[in-house]
Length: 550
Image (cartoon, rainbow, N blue to C red; front, side):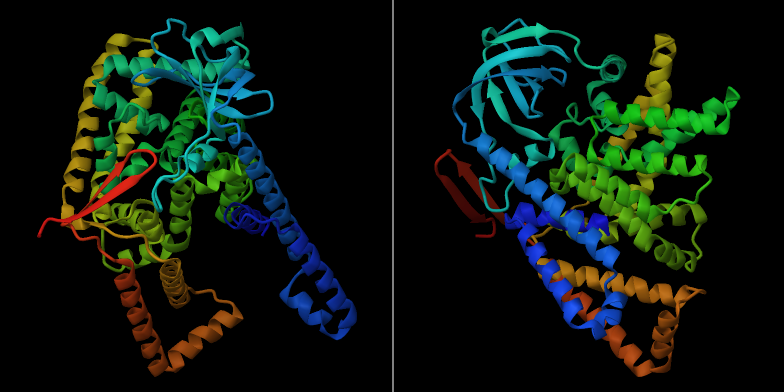
């Protein structure tokens, strides 16, 4: 319940732009007065609202709301310096990223503010990870959405904790000290750079970019066309580190340690340490953080001989992520990563039961079950974020998932061997390249099935609510039918449904009707012959709507 309050507090601060602390204080006073004056209702209030629940919910909501309001004010105060010269001392916390005309770095000040630093490529001096620098440059605030429901660059940078950008000439940058980052961070950074260099040297450019995406979630080496192919074929999750990657790491490390006769508990502690290193290497992205935290909780449960609760583990992961950066709630990776896991938890069991009744192969059931459960939950989210409804997810994931496991395992083996023998690594690179080419080919082929990819307009919030009400209620009713152990009220619900067959039939028909209406409203299909040309010249924008039939 602490998590629900925390998330609600963030959302009210972000979108309503109000502080709810005073509001909750008034509600709390009214609640206490009501209990004092109406003692006879006290027993019923306790049944409905537990005091502990109310206190935790309100306090967590107030804390997160006050915190997000403070962060918003902090960002907005700095945005007022747009276009002005600023002088600051900062630390370089990223490696050089090469753009067309500039080098790009991420820097952080002593106060915790992060900036993008741009310097011209004509300068010979290159900054390094861990440098302490003194800068004089021009600050630029990030732009918001330039078009209705368009990409909001300012919100995107907030999910990374970045306040804006600084453009500076290299002669206005003075290096005060080098190698000031702690040894663990330095080791992780050098290890990632070394892995990237070996991948780039031993694999073709396209395959190297895909492997970096699969192993580390690094997409900078992948061209936009390939990324679009993966999105349209419902395979975008392949290029973001997920639970599958973490499970392979955990199983691999534990297996190797067992071969060296390391005790089980000790092996689990070492694996936890490696997962923490992996989070540092990948830059604590939302999907990696979620997968690794849940993996760490699982390992701790084994160490303590406790049964793991999936809802508790995912709640802890969400809470940690949002405490570190509340703006992560707007990150697409965060939403898709946690949404996928929630979909598996809620719908996975029932989808598997339905597939089992179809007498399908058990391995096939496992593959289809996870894919369907995830997609049921993510359909509205994909429509809101990408304006795309893709029905090729079953086919694409059936073809890719077995291949993904091979690429992940072979990719990590390839990297480990490359530190020992470049000759053997070069030999493995031949097979690895073939598998990656197959992966790209599948993504391209599935994205070319155009009739399965429907572009839609953003659905209304009401429509999304109706959709989730339908799928959740249908899932719940099906759970009642297949469950052997029911609570008293659940038994009564089931008995009433079985006794009143007419009402049951009417309910089913109404649900189906509602679902059809919901789909019709959601699928406001964008005509294929409609084109919108947007010409942006800075101060003014021109939209030209054309229809190819006319």
